[in-house]
Image 1: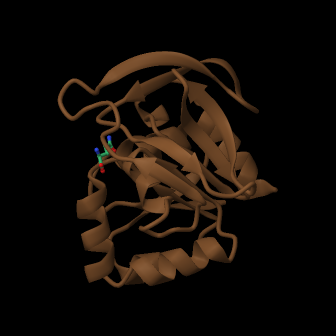
Image 2: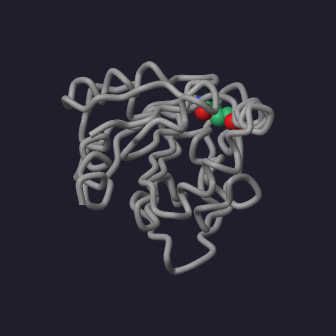
Image 3: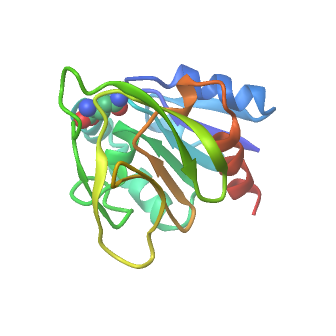
Length: 183
Ligand code: GLN
């Protein structure tokens, strides 16, 4: 099993380390030839979604990534990665997100919450995070709600979180994603 990690910008190394701890191999995608390697899933990390969008487009990665997700490649997007999956960007997930939803400067905080299918007390690190404003189709299922806002969701084999599980020590969300790859 091998997971591609989009490594154009942002917190991708932390995802690779989480996968390693789960015994799952990964490789970095920096250009089209990386992307063309065989893979069982994709991680879109946190960072700056506008920069990631621009780089994906200029490196000709945008269309192939969108196509692969639409054809069923499992994907896990965290924070900026969730924004990339949303309406108006890759648009593979039927969600509308609000960027920097908690404010730009003071919008970083830590919480614990329940995530459906995963359990209680999941650590949630938010860094200038988005949240899901609106779920646009019944195909998309909210998995976690914090202070009345949706902060995690799943649509088929697409998983997205507003927060950064790769920055905490809890492996459960990555494990959940790895199980999606195997199914
Ligand atoms: N604020 C960033 C954006 O809009 C996301 C922040 C993050 O990924 N930690 O892209």
